[in-house]
Length: 305
Image (tube, rainbow, N blue to C red):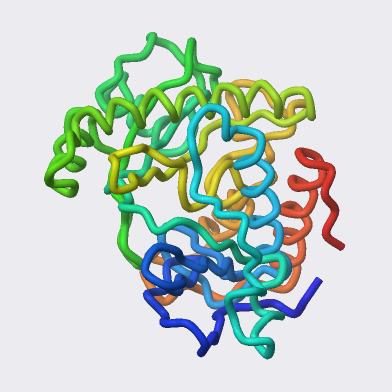
């Protein structure tokens, strides 16, 4: 495992931007180099301490799911080796933690699918009996398995801002406004169908590996022909809640293989959940790194020491 990478410094390609976790560079006019750093965001704030190996774990896991689920929907992958598009002196920054992908127009929503009642969905349910306008049965407990997976879109937050749950009708309007010349409402419907299909197949597979996928978020983009693609990441510990099946029961927040461990720690602090984020103790960093690596190995068989 290489040294932790908080921020890439590639000079051979134009830098387009830095997200909460990923640095994005242009590769010609039609492709991007996406470098996954070891940065960790919690409550939509990037924390000052990187998690060693996190970038490699996320890249390996996303690659696994892109390959396993490509029959459901096309994805962003090009098959081009990241080392081939940067200077030789920069290859260590991309090896094992970067992808060369198609340059697509992203949908302006987070495509969230929930199979269990937890997180902001649980808070919404307690207040309204519904999640994103979707009515649910009365009397559900914390972490209850839902009768069927539900699509609960959210706005995309910039660094330091918070995602906001929205209704499907609002998601359609967001897509229509962001994609002039395309049928945004139809693309939102297609994204909803694809997201539920992707989640359902992944959840069935993960269950055979002793992991429950409580919820996850996908991102989608379209090419010049209006064809929907799966982009960004897919079913990683950053974008999903992974619960060990043998530790699950209704009424409690189960232990997890994702960054919920960090969120739980941060909830014990006197922090307003705004930037700058607090420093993490060494024990929290190491245990988080170990959880990410264990999730990768359990789900894919890939081991990163």
